[in-house]
Image (cartoon, rainbow, N blue to C red):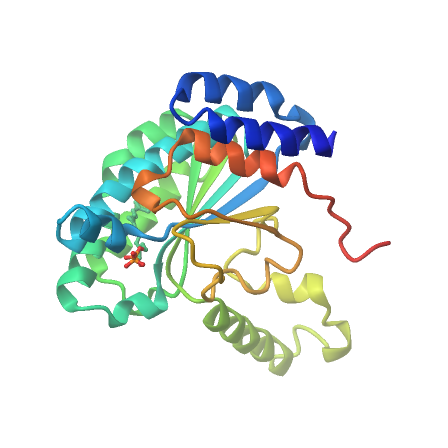
Length: 264
Ligand code: FPP
């Protein structure tokens, strides 16, 4: 079965000029019983896309929101239960003020704009990160998105915003130490399950698959704890060019992997 999927992956890349046929082939080749429960994505390459087309960087981010919509749609169709996007890292605060302001505005306005439709589709919106530096108007939009969608069950759309994996682990450790000092928990009782309860992702299962676009092969401080056994797929495609078929190919590639979780 795995060999067959590898062959189909090769065949599908020959069909890039015929996207509809490619979609059909990919969808028909997927094992519906092995769809990843949680897909995380590092959406990289917006700046390079903009440069390639002679546009300012923010145009790249703007175009990237169209890829988010496409990806969310196909993930929803495939019944993927968790989709997590790395929208803004803690390191991104150090970018030029113009770009940071533009990104914040884009993220805030898109959360607001898409909320009604997301809610109608039964999608729960979860935004994770360290919000200390986040302006009040965006915090209000985040709270509102959480509140409006909190009972939705069809799918979880998680946005990592002002997020850093190391920082998340430090924040979790601080809260855990506080609980130890207040004698709510004994040191001897601490284990992986307990620790996970202190992470931003406490109610979210670990990602099964990570996709990173733009050809960079690293995880850039994303979900460090949670990706201990995640399968990685790296694609050279720049995020604004990432489409439904690229996503389907990544899922098919995931299905060529044998997951052993450290077992024989
Ligand atoms: C990486 O490309 C991308 C980002 C830092 C931002 C991604 C954010 C969006 C697409 C908007 C998100 C909106 C919502 C609602 C979640 P880069 O700028 O690092 O690209 P480069 O490496 O080519 O310079």
